[in-house]
Image 1: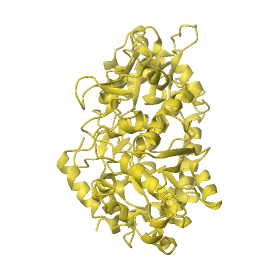
Image 2: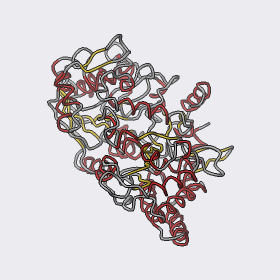
Image 3: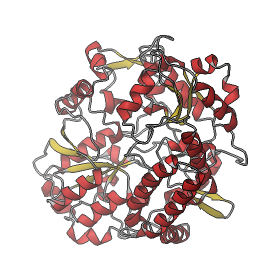
Image 4: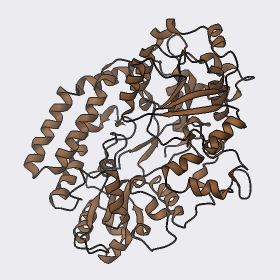
Length: 553
């Protein structure tokens, strides 16, 4: 991690960035403060919250029941998105908009679409009412300053931010390399032998000669090529990281006085050339491109895979968290350092720690339930270290409690709640909690899932061990000012980013499966041409650089 001094310097610069005025043209369609008051008249205690992601919901869950009957006295009715979030958003906007409030992961495309819809209520006044809304007033001011448009309006309630930006929580680190130590032992190798990419290749060749418990040949290397992933979050990133390519944030890294974009980094090509080499040699799962998540999970659970690259969440963690000892293949997974690649001085960055808000709550200008919305998020955003856990699992003493002291270890105290919560069944879990932690905030002072005394099986402790280990491997850094640049609404970055993502997903498969080095070079040339012709890559980069030069002033 970078030093705190450097982070403070970066944050100071970030706070002083010139904020783009992309949503100011919606001003004339907003109700005045008097209008807003009348909209909330009657003291409504219920509102509809549209989730910008797919989820299993149950609007009579135990946690929602507590919100409704006890604190804060608000009935939150959840509506989930089906399918692609942007498609659903555009459909919703074009058919009259959402009913009351919507929460989406912070995203420039979402923000722009919301603001262009002219269906939003401006909210800046409610962040300056400490007597009535102390939780909203406690939001660190630098976050709010960066959200203001040219007229001083703020168009969303920020959530899932660090309560203490000067000392941010580092977050879960999960993108790395995970090896089965039992397979390592069976081929006469150790973790130390995987220190280089050549050592990894030697292991893969030996693993290809091993059989699983059912007699099937092991899959030496695998990873999940999820159709929903992005440049900043994909399993291939663990391999790109070893080759020194930065994919975290927007995939931009400053080297000296220059900025290097991931697709322009020569080692981006080198990493995919290595993957292609392994694929042609039959050292990567031949179904890697077509595997569904369920297939990938099952292969790991049954012990078919010797080495994984990518997020350990995708393996998934349940293959070891459900065990008390070495009774199944999943027990033997261990994370290993990124293998050294010749000519690569340091690993790339695959995760940027950004204390700024990760989600935005948009409020419809047509809502009749503003008071309920404000009351609920004033409650969720109380600046307490444990508040994210309170929002996720209910208040302390109801379904969970401290083992020894506040902000120490905790455990579930209600067996029925615990059974449903940890069942692994989405419908059962939805009966007890909607897992709406992202409506709250977090703190480095206490993180619940690193302090549970209620992990159940011994394997649960391995997940925390893994994330702490990956967090020290050099692939994570705190956000720099250039990570926080706001792109122009309706600009080239917004327009072409979706197509650039489509191109990445199309050509990663073609590069990986090229039959030989000649075809790989052909596909690489086509990839570069597609970036330019379909993605307007050079123009997009120029726009980013122009925005950077303007905003760092």
